[in-house]
Image (cartoon, rainbow, N blue to C red; front, top):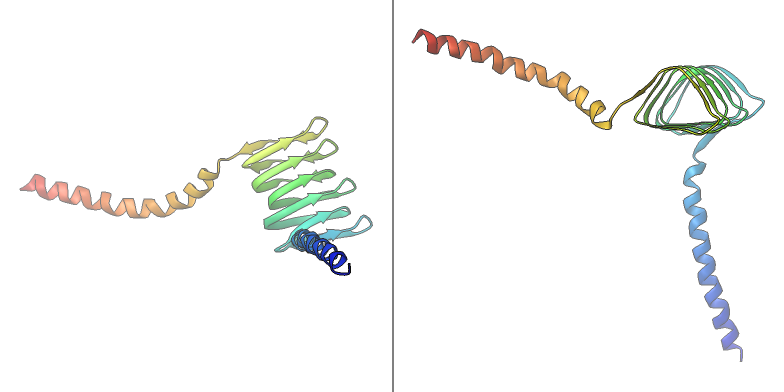
Length: 168
């Protein structure tokens, strides 16, 4: 009789171990800095982790590899450069996203936006220009800058070859 209850307890511990696995995976999103409601920052912010803003920022925000989220109470008077930007509060400034911009229904943006993907919910406010760029354009631009130097060398040699063959 004692063995069956132990077997029943062994099975729940196995399922308890499975419940611990999601806790470990949820620790990854916790690598996010949070600016609370009562905080005000004036200056440049840069970093290598996601940022949640529920307070005020004046200056610039440069987090090119991660997400910047402006909470419902957040007020950002700054240019923002990030991989992904989610706006539920107010942003006054230009936004550059290497991936996507999501303006929620209670969000407001006043400024120019350069993105790959954009989502603007009903009720959201967007005042400014929007420039949507394909991912290929951003990758091709640096390549084109290096290729003209390579292309100009063969083209400069080609007229010399044509001139020599014309003289012959």
